[in-house]
Length: 199
Image (tube, rainbow, N blue to C red; front, side, top):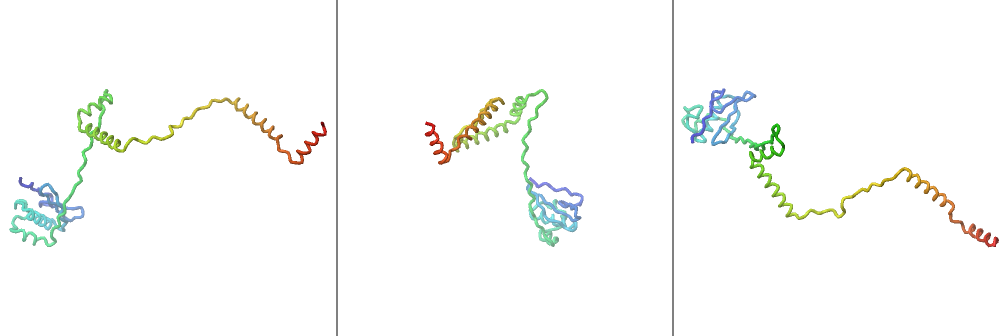
């Protein structure tokens, strides 16, 4: 299969286009690959650099900007700056997963079933993902459960009256406690003696 011939652009030369800076850039394609050659001050010089690339990959003379040049050595001599071919790599875009569009009057379940019929490869990929994840979890072993179960809060119903009763009881206890102070040694003997006198 013969390589595709590059069309002449606004510059009037194959593979040459003007840059915003005013200089002339050279691109070259071969076997499905794109190459950036360099930037040159004039379109004429850039076209000669393109021809050097054509000579290097042994393209037909019809692909040359200057077919009158007889040899590769002569072509390279006419480009004192030389050429510096760098491959232009483009990142391949990942295909976007089609979205599920729910039509008017269609339920979610019907839309998902239609999607599964139209795109079985996505359904299969999703199933495989979950199978793989399940297999990995089985290898790791069962999940560790917490020793204590979930905490439960039991609500206690109470009325304001209950609280009032409780506060009254507290006050009575405090009063009783006040009279129960431990007597000193002298007070104890004084009380003991007075009880003996009464008898």
